[in-house]
Length: 419
Image 1 (tube, rainbow, N blue to C red):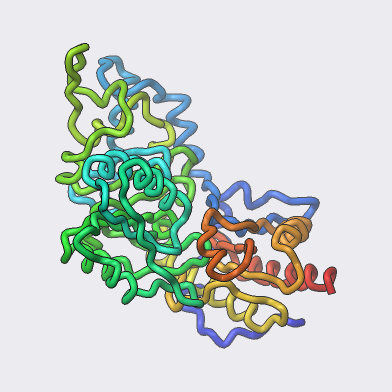
Image 2 (cartoon, one colour):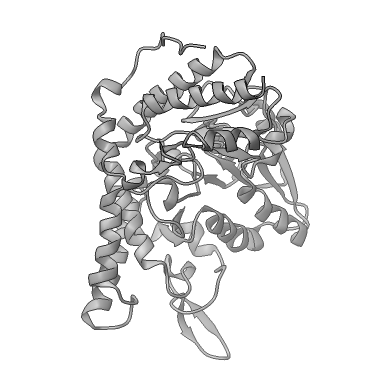
């Protein structure tokens, strides 16, 4: 089968110099079994550009020390850089105040922080938590643990066969017992973009706070937490060209001040005696122990890198990529695209008739193509579509149209082997 000539007019490709951008990513020069790496596993973790690597090396070689309290040069420098990273992330998401940005080890850690710090205090027996079928396990399991502990109940928003939430069903779940909503901004398994602003407005009209899992949204679009009016928003550094082990929780200051700490230890306290401990102010109340200083600085460098390219340009270019890949795949016999929502980011989940996803991933790897296979920590999604797993190709702004062609060619080779 030949590649289909695209009928779609590119939105941004002519203005976006992907080949120049690719030179910033050393790992893209890698060869797998003699073949150029085609990295299409960005929803799991994106790659790191040289400016971010350089910034982390600078910190480790010239600025490293523990932060806060010490008066020597290195500690003061590290503290300044760490807090400047917080300020840059605050600007990136347009939070109102620096103290609304809490450093965590990632999205999972942040959701657990809210489940324990807010949920344990304000959600009790008989209360209800609304989640959706599209959630990553990280936004399901902590709430199940809380519900099991305190007698709360979880209600679930269903989806249709394009992978979109049934918003009328969402509205019908609300009642006097509804105390919290947890919703993903973008499905990691399908790429579906949820109408979270509309969902937040509906919840707030009923006095219900909303946490948004933005792990898959922040890499692909501009995030403005004030415009969304969400109560909590979280994402991870390693999906935005930064290091692993770092993420943020945004929370409205008034809510954070009412919450109890999730972790106890150094720096999250104002004073400690054996009779009583008083807690530090936010955000420090939620950052017990030595934080991931180097990772936070690397995270902010990644944010600077992405901002310099421009998130709107990134979104437009990636839209070209996913539209082209989707059009090619729709013309291929024996291919089923899993999830075909009207609003999607650059994620393409699919199945090949008669071929297990793990076999697809193995054979594509032999062509140098890295994709993700499995349930993607989204088993309720798999159950809805009646598949045990999918193959997921997830694109980033440094992927090229030629790499989409390589994926299509690789799929054709897989089909030929199993024909």
